[in-house]
Image (cartoon, rainbow, N blue to C red; front, side):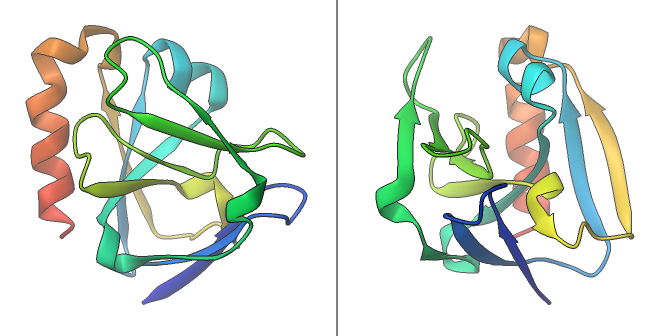
Amino acid sequence: MWYQGGCHCGAVQFEVEAPEVIECSDCNCSICAKAGFLHLIVPKSRFRLLQGEDQLSLYTFNTGVAKHTFCRTCGIKPFYIPRSNPDGVDINVRCLNPIPQNLHITKFDGQNWEQHGAELAHLSKETS
C-alpha cells in the first residue's frame, strides 16, 4: 500500500510503498537517537518525492556514505539515503501521515554499527 509523508512544515512531501504491517527499527546511534528516527528502508522504486526537492539540505558525517536530507525550513528529516543500503531510501515512519497503527518496532544497536550493519542491510532486503 502507498503511504503519504512529509516534513513538519509541509514543504517536503513524499509517498512510499510499504506493507500494511510495517517492520521498522529504532536505532540508538548518535544521530538517530537524537532525531527519534524510526527506520523503514525501501528500494528507490518504492519512493516518490512529490514536492520540496529544492527545500532539502544535505548533511553527511563519518564515512560520508549516508546522505542525510532534512527540510531547510523546519529541520525535520523525513528520509535519507542510508549507509547500510545506499541504493535504497530510509523513511522516518514518524513522518508518515498518519503514522501507521500496525508497526512492529525492533531495536537496532547502531552505536556498534560496524558489528550490526550487515543485520540492518539484511532487514532492508526483507522489505524489498
